[in-house]
Length: 163
Image (tube, rainbow, N blue to C red):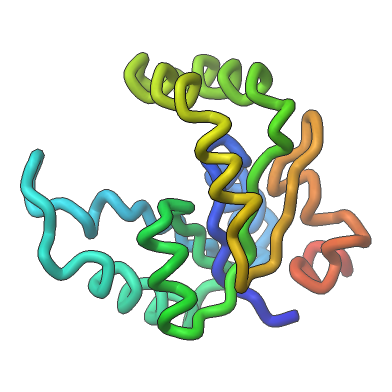
């Protein structure tokens, strides 16, 4: 498996995976926030989005162990349209309370936590229906870092599996 693009649902531990990889000299992990590419300024969409984001992702895959990207539908569709293999990482549906607590604990804005509370099932429906990618469904207490050493995902995280 040579997947370098990880589309991670909010709260799955993208930032912690990046820190872990860099701290342990396992390679650079590019945390590529789509908001830097989708807006020209507050309230004004970038007409080049998502193509500008896809270009960035392609460039980052050349020198990064992984590129962490958004799970927004427009991004998932663009990844597939460009033939970019990716893993979609999201939590089990029943973990809504755990994830809402993660958002509060990390000081996410109230509006974000409220949105995730209201739209949880819709977002999980989208993840479950997604085709054309490897799916990693996190169970209770799991994060990207905790599964990086899991034998089941060793092909995705070979450097971690061999440490």
